[in-house]
Amino acid sequence: MIKLIDSYSYSNQLRNESAVWKTGFAVIMLIMTYFSNAVFQAVIFCWMMYWTVVHARIPFKIYSKLIIVPFLFYAASLPAIILEISHAVSNDTLMLPDHYVIATFHNWSIYMTSTGIHRGLSLGVQIAACSSCVTFIVMTTPMSELFQLMNKLKIHPLLIELMLIMYRFLFILMETSTMIYTAQTARGGQTGFRSRLRDSSILISRLIVKTIQRYDELNQGLTARGFAGELRLAPYSHKAVLRRYRIESFIGISMLLLLNLIYR
Image (tube, rainbow, N blue to C red; front, side):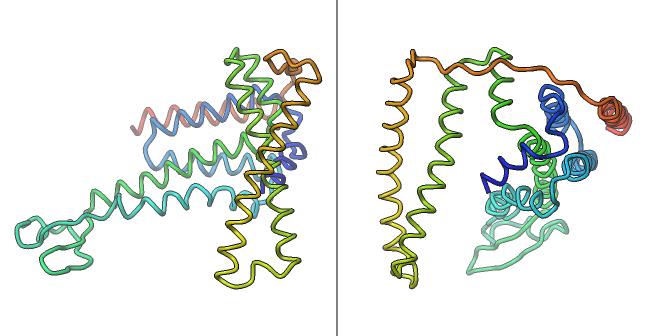
């Protein structure tokens, strides 16, 4: 999936547009999600999906897979948001109309409230809107341009270097784990439950060793090339933005701001 994201970031239809404009546009929409209600957050989600799928020509199947990832964490935390546990005998509030009892065990009850359900749904819509903004940046702008943009914005070089190394090691980890997994499968591993547990533990241990070795190789390579404590990036090259995109984004943001102020 990482290689797929990186591939689409270089081959999408918005690739040649300004990284400053794309990032600024997505950041503005991201900020607006925190000051809007659930209805406008849903509109922002649909609009950002339109930009990513229609304008950038990212396949909807790929886009939906990326959007589902944060919802897995949301689904894992949803029970803690909407479910409440109370002592059924001493708590008369369970008889209120906005309380929905799910199960009762001895003198304890698990129930939901209208407030908890509303909070959970609102959080889900906000997550969808924020995820669509971040996905737009990731799928339309290569990481190299994002690093150059952060350098232009005078972000601390140490932070950029850490992100650059981490981004590089994501590909190293994926490549190494794929090679080890393929080798184990070719030798008859990863078949039963116990075999999977044993082979997975071996894969993780070897992955750590391989990663340390690749880090040493990277460190030696940087030293041999005269690394003086700072990774120098190519300067950011400004790119123009099609007038159509500028007008469409300006009109959309203006309408959202106006409607949000009217119906707030």
